[in-house]
Length: 446
Image 1: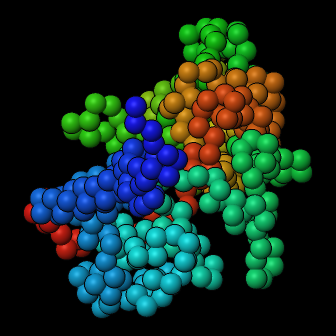
Image 2 (image 1 turned 180 degrees about the vertical axis):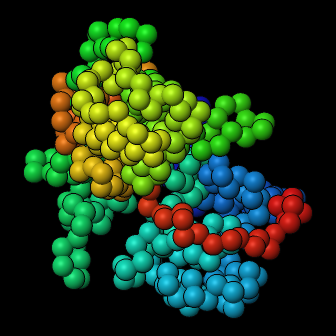
């Protein structure tokens, strides 16, 4: 039997075991070398294939997806874009106005995409500045951040808006808009048109909604019941030849006498004349009345001394003043024209217009909230009286717009309908845009 001492057994132990990788340690070392090598090979292979995904910050927005493989379309120096578009000569005034000079664009906002200049955006989107009097004005990428997936860049987060409008400061005087606006609805002030102390409706047209919404309103064919949509109609600006439906502005079309009023309120002025007076200025009405009477008596000279019929049409159901028979056609025209004008000024036209025979604009507002946009079309799922309390209104001065609470019934984070700032507010005045002369061709995006 062989006997080994402790010293002999200890000689079997490798005193340098810690220098040799075994087990999990060996796996870690191999992975530490293999993974970077694989990554370099992948990057090299993608570069050789012409793909730029390895250096992309992520998918671009849906509007820019067509140029996703052409990074240089946006990621170029401001000077390169200026030379490419010829902006230095053609758009110098616009560049000076918006403060987007090439040497300033790169360093204006260090936080957001400083390697994408405003001139890169202006190559395709010649958008007027959001706030031209802001120093310095916000860059495009300060609010519109790309590489966040297939999103719409116009749908900016409220945080970008609240950054300035949460505590708005001005260099000179008070702003005409609210100084502190947070998220809707709790952080948004009440709408200016309906808040306490707001001015009344400036319209000069006499109108009583309560009367017109009666269930037994007297119409041309007897009692009838009017619906809001019979007078208030969407404003359609054009109908494209190949469009599936008319293109609407979202506002209600302006009222006209012929469209909304003439059916029930004809401007008859004389029981002998079948044609009503035109809805026009007093001068034109006077000329029409005299011409109509002169034409009638020329065709019916026997009526100069003939008494009027007892049957009169509404609104001419009133007795004429007792007068001796006229002796000439001119006298007959003068007498009847004087009476007919009094009927028009004091009864027929006075139903809606005050101060006649003078003439003043009705001053009916075209858009009540000029700093916000609203589209009636998607809101047609609810009836008009859900938002407009017109049934009890008896005065023209009543402002029948809904308040913030009515909108918050649907437009709130807890309700699901979009409630971020961009839903109602547009930040660029697109009426001041410029023509785009793109330097690109279809081949540039292949």
